[in-house]
Image (cartoon, rainbow, N blue to C red; front, side):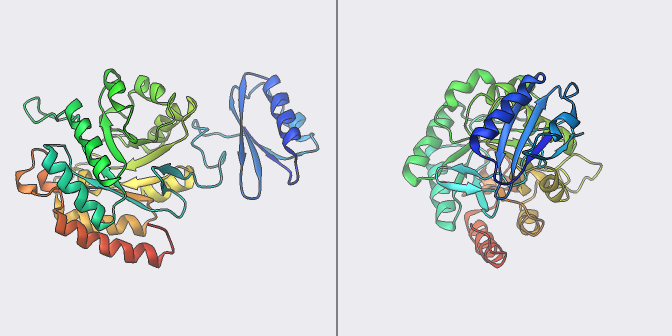
Length: 337
């Protein structure tokens, strides 16, 4: 249920109405202060609350029951775009960010070289896999704890906040100093993990599952937000279809749909979506055109020798060329990069 209050309502009156609404049933009230409107979002069992009784309050303008199962992630609850701040860099609203780096951390020299390169090209966040989920048990699984240490060293040297994927809650203590925790496609519906990460205030990059719907993605975000962590960034990384010419099929239509349904920032991962580096640049440009808030791009200093996903990684020169193009496009749209 959404309760929109009249303009001019005071803070004491907002608190009074919130307490009254919570006394009517098993609900929690979240106060959202927009640029023009104050909204009370009721999460829980609102079936026992009489809508007419609420509307009769002199400070209530309208009351609407929300049919969608996700509440906190719903734009009806939060009309203004959420802006997530990471190490002084903002994503969401008019702020566009590029997160770049190798699929996996392979050595100190490799991650440091790539980090310095992507920073000089204009990326503001560094990605890198320390723990790597692989289809084959014989493939490189990442450097694990040592990989996180190397990422932290790269952050110290470059100032770039780091983004890396968690595979198990058993590793959570290793992520204490990580700036953004990534939840990969295979863990999108690991609900115990989502609930646990909801108790921290660290930004969470949530990837859509290989065969999951948009509503399921938003429900996974809801798990995190229900725990009190509203710093969620949604990521479209391609879904599995019958097409064989690409690793996955990038669902660009998900961006405007998600922006319509939710207030959370949405980024695109064109690298994992396609599996081929020659497709990364055109799809990155398309992501900007459909309104994405950022990009997650794999960059390697020597893709041919990469231990993981070299075929979908841009080299440093290709990434520099892409960034120059993206800067022009973002400036043309009067957004901040």
